[in-house]
Structures are given as structure tokens and as C-alpha cells.
Amino acid sequence: MSRAAKRLFFFSLMFLVACSSTQSTLISSADSGDIESQVEVGINYYFGKNGFEEDKVKGEEYLIIAYEQGSAAAAFNLGSINQKTEKYEIAAKYYKTAADLGDFRGQDNLAILYMQGFGVEKDFIKAEQLLLKALDNGSKISNRLLGILYKEQSNSDKQLQYNLAFLNQDYTGWDKEKIGPLASELMVLYKQKDQQEQAYVWGALATIMGAYDSPARQDERELFEEVTGTLSEDKRKELAKSIVTEHYDLIDRHQYFLKRNEYKQLAPGVYEFANRGDLKFIGYFMHKNKEQVQAINYFKTKDTYDFKVNLAINKIILARSYGDFSALYLQNSLAKSQLEEAISILDPLDNDSLSTLKETTSRKLTILTDIYEYQFAEAKRARNENKKS
Image (cartoon, rainbow, N blue to C red; front, side):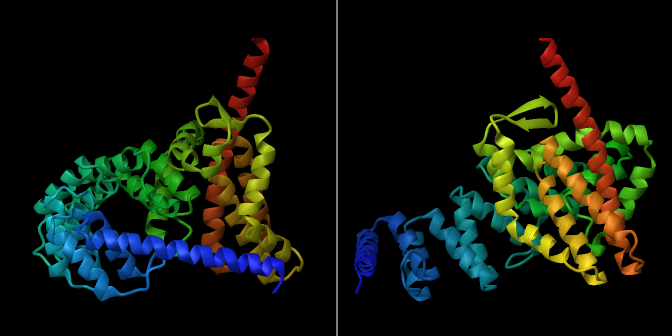
């Protein structure tokens, strides 16, 4: 055995010994009556995590021991386990215990059961009470669940209120893919209230976040087109500022790269990197989107119909990745360029199946162009002011 192989074997053995020692200590602590250890051991056994061999029976036993000693965490996990196996009545019992002990996860999940009528009789009033308690206890999802609850009750004012509150949280815990459809829901609500400008802003956000790319959202897409038609071109351009600032609040400020690198604001919705940050960003972006860039280079190699369509689609996807940093106006301009190239590829292709793709891409380009013109003008103004000072 080589020296390197021996070293690797030694460190692997040491790691296994350390893991075994940690498990033994944790199990010993649990068996001695420590509730937190019982919960941790129970979860590790049940799901086969952290070096524990999966044993659902033993895992549930540890959780029940902790539950019987008044652990809210154990009650919640037992509820979750039973919900996943569709034992809703048992799940509701455990969630109720967790909820009564102030666990917002138990309160949220029990509220969902009341909203659906699973394991309990459907009861929107109890669901509302639980969600409001969970909200007070620090839940990040209760606002969204309240939005869903009030939608079921056709209470559009509260539906709008709590969905906006959800999106205005410092952290939603949601993947950005889910934000676009919610933006579309807000567009519908504002349209119902005849607040066309707000409806346009949220419909534009839904568009650039890809919510309308799916043919399944044809009705909402058509409603957005109707909203768009009620506003003049000048008014739509004027709303570009609101669109990009709202997008920054929803998406950009949560981006990992922006959290780790210095950038400055030139105007609302207009940011640029400091200290050669653009060069760092290019490396980060290309690495993150390596497969997309490779796909684009590949589909450039043949001038066939299928290759052209795939080239356009991959450019649209890359544009959306650039668009996730829309408040950085140089990145927004790159998103705009990718969409322009995609449209130049798609327009000559005469195929009805591409109509939705052409339509949504064209609408995205219009919105990003309005944003770009606003950002370019503001960036120029800010630089001129800096020169004077």
C-alpha cells in the first residue's frame, strides 16, 4: 500500500472512530433522560442520518420517550412522520401537542390539516387562529398560508395583505422559482381592484421571473396583456423603476454573491460592483451557469431547426440567470442582449408551437429594455453628479 493510500486509510479510520464515539455519547445522553438528545437520536435513527443506521422503529421509540416528557420538538416530528405516511388523525394529535406547547411548526402544520380537512374536520376559523399564533411565534411561512386561507374564503383584501407581508419578510425560506407565480397572483388581485399600475408591476415581475413561460398559465398571461394594454407606453416606462426596485427586494438582495461582495447604489434599483467586482462576478456567474454556457456553444454548431430552437431556449434560460441580478444594470443589459439574440433566432421559424415562447420572450425583452433605459439614464446622471462634486 502506498504512503498516500495508508494516510487516506488512517484518516478514514479516525473519522469512523470519531463518528462512533459521537453516536455513543449521544445515545448515552438520550438513555440517561436528556430530552434534546432523545429527539436527536430519534431523528437520526428514523432517517438514517449522521452515521446512524436507519431504524424507523427505534427512531420512533426515542421520539415517543421525548414526547412523553413534554418535548414540543418530538411532538412535531412525530406529527410530521405520521402525516407523511397519511396517518392524519395521529399526526393531528401530535401537532396539537406541539402547537399547545408554542411550537410554530406544529401550529402551521395543524392549520394546514384544518384547511384541508385531513384527520380533523375542516375548520377555517381554527386554522386562522393557529396561523396567527404561529406568526407571533416567529414562523416564516404563516403569512403565505394565511394568504392561501383567505383565498379559499374569497377575502381578497386579506389575501393581498398577507401575501405582501410574506414577500416583504427579510427571508421567506422559499426558492425563487415559487415567487413568480405568487407575483402573478398579486397581479390578479390588483387587477380585480382596478389598480392597473400595481397590477402591471407585479405582472411584469411574474413575466421576468418566468411565471408565464408555462402554457398552463395562459389565462394569467392574457390578463397581464390586458393590464398592459390599459397603460400608455410612457407610463409603462415610468413603472420600470418600481419593477426593478421590487425585484431587487424580492430576489437580488438574497443572492449569495451579493451578500459576499461590495456593491453600491447609484439610484433606486441601480447598483454596480465596487473594487473590480464585475470581474469577480463574471467568474462566479460563468461557473454557476457552466452547463448553460456549454449548451449554448454546442447548439451553435449546427444550423438545423432543432438546434436553433434549443439555442434560443438556452439563451432565454441564461438571460433569466442574468436577470436574477437585474438591479446590477450591467447584468440586466446582458440579460437583454441574450433575449434579443433569442428572438432573432426564433422570429424566422414558422411554427405555431413556438408562439407562446415568442410571445413571452418578446414581453420579457420589452420589460428589461424599459428597465435598462431607466438604469442607463440614472447611472449616467449619478456619474455626472460625481464629476461635478
